[in-house]
Length: 405
Image 1: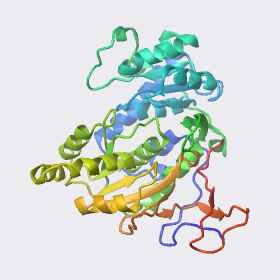
Image 2 (image 1 turned 60 degrees about the vertical axis):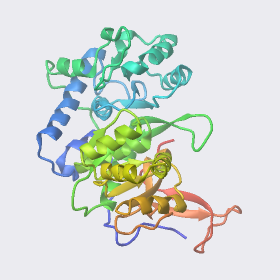
Image 3 (image 1 turned 60 degrees about the horizontal axis):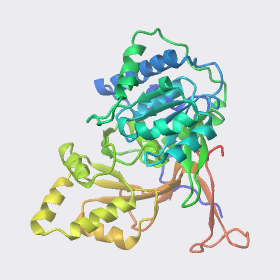
Image 4 (image 1 turned 180 degrees about the horizontal axis):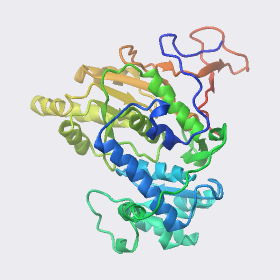
């Protein structure tokens, strides 16, 4: 029995397979939501100037070598330029290696060695770890760049390293560079990201994610949610080094949403940012919601009322990356009855969303409906295909977003 998306979901033709992700994001002809404001145009220009400055500084040209031999690592907490670095990297025809900010020097060294990476973007708080790992691999100090944070960290010798803003200023003095050349169907094989994954547990491995994989998932998700009356104002809280956070951020940029970025999770910062910017959508993982629930149960009536006032602008919460049980979802709905709890299912190897709950069709405990162009089968332990509803089995997925390997 083959499962597909609901017939109520708008159909999606097969996504373009001959473009980089950055073209999908910035080129109106690919259906990007039309956003005519200074902030978006400034962001696009920032990506372009960053790619020019980086190209000149490290001597890489878009059509020389392959993305497999010239990888740029990002080892940082969330910053406003994290996604911009990945898009600038793609304009150079290169791939980004995403490394979780909690990684040790040994783990960082392992990822850098496995990918052959010799260029790193980090942030001041993680610079000591970065230097420890890069020293063992003879990565030159001139190839380590800093993503700036709103509050400078008290780390010595950071002035020796170029920042993203300095690269952008440098890029403004450089001529327009040639664009990376793409042949037909090349998006299916050209590498966009190397993402670390260990499944639910085990040793981390690098997953090869193509441009076509991410382009597909952006269009699949945007089509699934087509018809939303307003663009969202959401919170960029989850680490962009994780595929769930990065791909959902790219989806939001494509749709023209507003994203308020926090370096990392902090309960009080999350509450303050939500209230200050009147955010209407939160992208969270179950542990954060469980923590919020436990926190709320310890509050008195007055304090609970204050908590609710911080979150009163929220209309929907998108949950992914781990299971979220029905009992907890119901408890959360009692405290925040105006929230739509939109659960989804996905994995790094599917780049990243497979199924998702549609607004107005919430069923707590469910991971929603399959996205357009996703087909799924259930296989029993015996290897035979499940043909009856309500029968468990191993999930087998077919989708244009399934990774290279």
